Length: 368
Image (cartoon, helix red, strand yellow):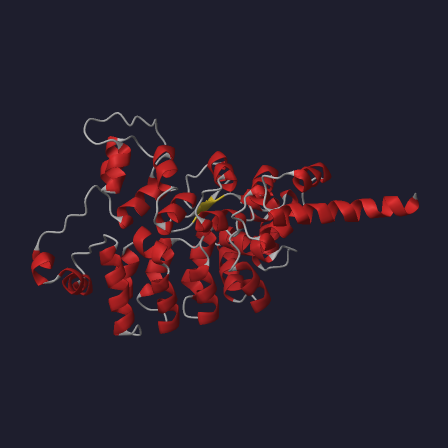
């Protein structure tokens, strides 16, 4: 059973503890669903937001209305904890941004949450406060992944002209061109000069071209089309088109783009909704991975539930010691022992592992 909003977001109740799923099940008695709609069911902040989102499309109008009212009146302690949490599903975050966009404290948390859908950010970009709009303008990955955000930002009357110019300049340099946005045309003139700016814009190979020629996003990876191969195509693509391909493309494209010299492209690839568990583990093991890619991996609570991912991150010398310490204490004793003897890990990790083993063996020596 899933639920869908008018914006098309769909989630499953599987995110809830098994014993709580009955409270969002349309087949369950109305009083059970109404309890959750009123916020009377003991749920964590993350689960509370998801449950209210699901109940906002409940078949019973009373449940729907109550869920909407509860969502609008959630206390600060719940919202401040949940809205920053990437464990909240994207449709839920987008729904709450639509409700809380004019409350800066919450809007800021939502636009800074990497899981908040780009479409939801674009929807509020033209009318939010200057502070929130500037935060949006600083997220370069969002701007290139979803250029309509730029189109909306330039219409925001609260945003200073200097910020609009800076945003448009960045977008143009990255290969974005919105023909219907005068501020983008002005940016082209500033960057390339009047004569060059007057010429037709050539974006080079587009993500759509590559997806068409090298197989669908989740289909077989042929790479056998006549003409330029995939790597050659990618070399000629703008940053903006690479980011689109990193988000929508197949594993073959992601594998190349994860190694791209531009950190925004590599980050877009690891954040692709099509990324697989195997690719995540490969990046955790990759000593040549971008620091931003590794940061995305070790900051994701769901991904680091995988024991092999944690172990790989601990062994990776590019992962900060503070992060290693967090994961090291959760490893099996046998693995910590191996790390204390492993000369292929950083000296800091080896030392930490040795100290952990010494603490575990110290009481045994005392008893002897």
